[in-house]
Image (cartoon, rainbow, N blue to C red; front, side, top):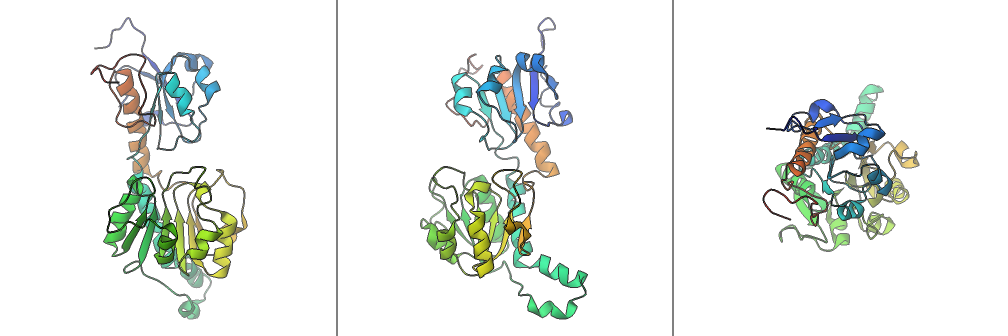
Length: 324
């Protein structure tokens, strides 16, 4: 039982965090502050961090007692992980909470674009029933999906695509997919895929991975879906590919930066836009917050959390099981 003479540890929110979704996992005596002031930050030993919150050196300086920060999701682009590691701060991530939701979003976008729901909806709405034969409607069954990045989300997309009867190809320069679906040549994947979906991490090397060269290699009429990282796609090149017919549809849930400045691509009738919500469903939100809070609780209780962005992290206070 907690010692009543010892003040409860302070855990703060960095960004908008619903207290109701973190209170249960934090019940081991922590006090959660949803809207922290300077004194709360100075006292904080844990933080739950939303995707849009910047945790740089200055932010860490305002939290001198911090032992753990838990990011809701997996992207740590705005977190100075190296500095946190140097200070003995665990950077917890929640890799499984939104994977299924994103994968469903990918398939939803693919269905929308291949089945031409937008164009067909406009025909009925505008009294253009007689023109329905002018809209070419496709199928997922029998089509090929090319998955760029075969981590947790990519693997779930593959499972859903197979359930639709799709042929799966996958490319990942870091972890080779199974031999039967592995496509080491990215241009070959583009050439064979009716649907291309992006799930690679954003690095300096693959920024604008989908550029004019990639799209020149793409199968004519392919659909492109990006629920990964906005910087993977050159929007100017994508617009050109749509106008030329090289692409027949584009679905975007992520942008660079976010929120994005308006781009002419956004006005194209065969483009489907969502505001980075595919991994943030009601269920995924609850699971993400709970996983982040459990990660904070684990570190404060002397346990190693399940998932870390800095696996080399060495706690200032030794863990209960003696692990490092």
